[in-house]
Figure 1 (cartoon, rainbow, N blue to C red):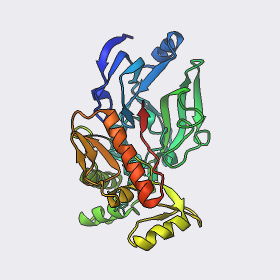
Figure 2: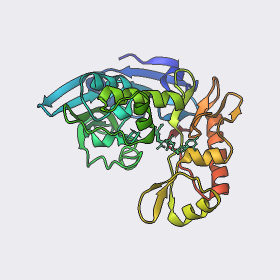
Figure 3: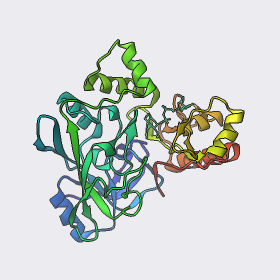
Figure 4: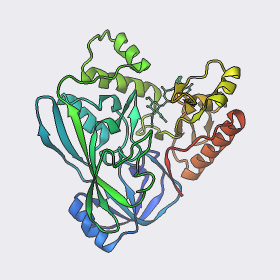
Length: 336
Ligand code: EPU
């Protein structure tokens, strides 16, 4: 365990924001983490850095979770139970599963970040949420250094939500995630329009896990910027759920508004569509802006500051509130 001084965090966050850590340590085992917690509890955690916007230098000790390793706990002919350590790269893990014919997370291909943070916001894409395959979340309680295991129900997963964003926020360090995946009779989810189109394009009628993963990769590449090329954090806002009454009011003026029914009284609308209508899609302000192909994604073209991007987010929120009477909720963690 070695504490480094004055480290730039640029390569540790997918937005590519260049702030620095006064002190920085990379942790590769649960034991090391427990030892560290005995001497320092007021820490700032960083893992894949794919869901945060850093707006200033970090004064606290920055702890980079780099605990790697995948183990097969048990398996039979139908399914496999895995425990995956928090520092494993999410997309590499998805590809490993696809190559081993383990089904369930192929629709979540190419999502940036690490395994240890996937439960926090219950990552989801193309009709699948990670909560549907998670069996447990292992975590260290910061106060006591005790290792605890949360069941799927304990985590209270919701749309881009879990207890690790609410009641348990800042209290635990996620060290590993358990998954149950299928080995045969995979429950493929190809209902999402773009996947269907992509499969049809390649004339695939009976898709394999690999076909679906490839289709998702192609769709994401065509719409979402690669953080290695253009800094970003995926969807910056959540898709808002609004009352049916408000939806009907907006629909009167905008008959083409896309929507998903949540209940008899509530409708979810895509934030990307709202932001596009407000005229922000593809807008560039110097070193930062709104992605040209998906208005839900704010981007850093080079050396933008976190504050600049945060200001843009607030400007977008104000515009959407004025135009549609909808409060957009920020999905990314703002570190201020
Ligand atoms: N739309 C626009 N303009 C835009 C973007 C979208 O009009 O600039 C419209 C599309 O035409 C479509 C609808 O909005 O009718 C939905 O768009 P899309 O299918 O791209 O999905 P999304 O609702 O914008 C969500 C997730 C993404 C996930 C996709 C696919 C949230 C906040 N975002 O986006 O997740 O990849 O669905 O399932 O739920 C992420 O969380 O980082 C992320 C990328």
